[in-house]
Image (cartoon, rainbow, N blue to C red):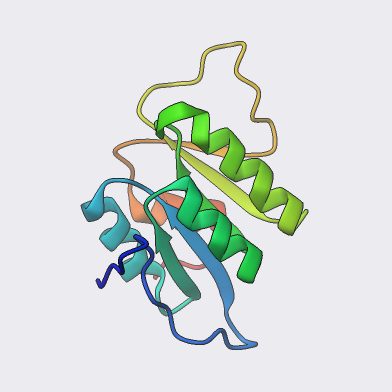
Length: 130
């Protein structure tokens, strides 16, 4: 995995056959694992921060986004909102380190507790096992 100065991985040009999956996850092993698992099904792009993902989403909306719920400054909420403003039908999966409190409302996002099996993420994204 190559990370540029802006903390964004370079991805091949988007093809009409592949949907775009954006991963916003500070843990490099988790980034790599998700990218490797889904690379043949999606055009996968990895971002490590809110600022880098905003640029990616503005350039080309995501069809699906996996975002760590434990990003600093409530960035996960802002990223989800931005992704939805770019594509109202984007599939959002929040990876969480603890179950949601009863008052947390991310009704449109799926929540997947860490650690998780990549096949569980594939199921949420609606793709056959890789």
